[in-house]
Length: 450
Image (cartoon, rainbow, N blue to C red; front, side, top):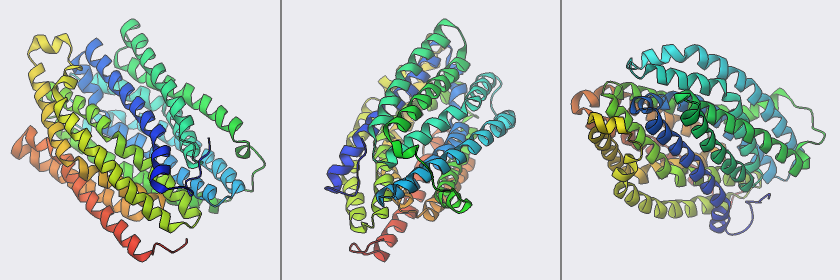
């Protein structure tokens, strides 16, 4: 299932490569959505709010591992694009070692910091136990998530976007089944939701690793000597990408701290809106993964002209889909939010506040979604080209915008100030990466070879 992204019409190649990634992200977002709906309906809307306030912390930690594994995959894609199978094998081994070290750091550190972080975010007493229980289980199982993401990124670097899809579908179905078993039947509450995710990803990681070693024999053959220099070359891309995700995560934590000053019904509504919004982002995220590996392979092959053609094609395809998604997100905002509401919320009269909070955030997001799509496209293209500095700068701008807005706008405009914080952050970061990509194009003529 390998796919050479350096041959064929760029638009057709990218669409074919992206479709399995899009389908996979649909399944991932759907099981995340179902996961949240099950918590809201079978536990309580306070539990839903408790899980919701962990989003920023989870994004920070999971973003670190996603950034590292994505960066490692881009380096592997460059070796593959250059036709260097021995280099691919060495890159795979280096990635395993780096991810093993990351697993230890991202398990021990977050477990020790769970309570200080929740207190720093001014977590309300009524939802504190839910947030704490969910986070501790997620951190205990971080190795499973690192393992799956590392193997999936390696396979995508080889042009194989289908295999991660198959295992993601399996993981999604297993996760939903375990959610119902652990929460509804065993009564484990929010911890059950976390254990369902950890177990599903752990099983998927083991199966995916076994398949990769069987399907691609050159990954398990004799490996050239691995040097510190090679590890540094991988980290040169992985660390800035991880920092960029981490910086975004810090901004989300600050945003969540601002939201925590509002009633639990508002927090629950914001949580529901975030889950729905994530589905709207999946096309951009999927094409972002595709363009990063596409740029990595073509850079390795020296095909600079194809890079520009592929980015241009991806821009128009993703923008066209963005318009459709924005219309659907606005039209379906209220019906989708009602899926998260349990009988307790209806009985207490909190449901209207949840719906209002969710709908207003989704409408505001839809207006600025084209900006987000541009941000994701150019950021990933630059990272695939090894240009990691400007995406990191964009992340810093995003943090400054989100932090400054979080500290001021809610005090002035109340919840209306909350809903525009993300949009301001998107605009700031998008300006940086767009200018950086244009400058790269001007410095690198279409006919040049890397």
